[in-house]
Length: 227
Image (cartoon, rainbow, N blue to C red; front, side, top):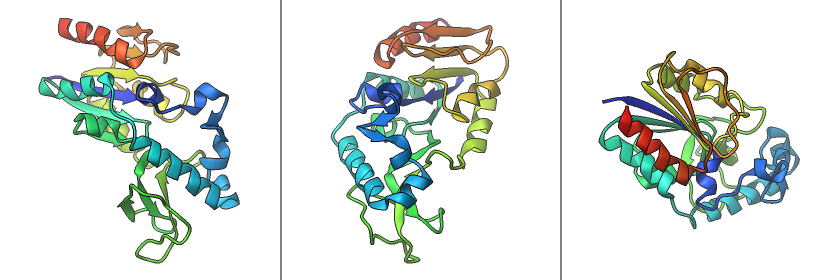
């Protein structure tokens, strides 16, 4: 049973109808990302940030996993699969994937502004005055620009043990996540599915599949079957 590590980005969720800010000149649903995805934006206009994520949460509950999500979940029948995602949605889990590490947080969770360890599931609106058990304002459980990525070390440990490394729907421009492939063991097969792939270094066993996620996983399946 092979250990497959999959790094996913916004491209896989885009085919379910979730828009990405990098396809709109730094705008995310019409917002400047630094206004709604940075500590500075939170301090400047907390109400705006809360409203923005309330809208994103509602949108997420209206969309469904796509064939690429289901393909990755199906790989668990024959392989040990660990997904590391830059996405904050729960589409991997809804498709049936059981091992998903969210590098950049989760939209359907909130956390205390004073104690990051106090994290709560959350599906409705989050408003000013919603407090944690220690009476501090709750905020989206999202890793914003300028904040540390707390699960990075765990992600690196996962990559070090990979037999096969798959990249789907990510620009490979957002660090530190884009550097994770460097921790995959030398010589293992690396597959990169993206319509505009930015090749992440020199990998002799790199196979580029210049397609969107749903089409790309069909081609990937043929390669995996031949391994």
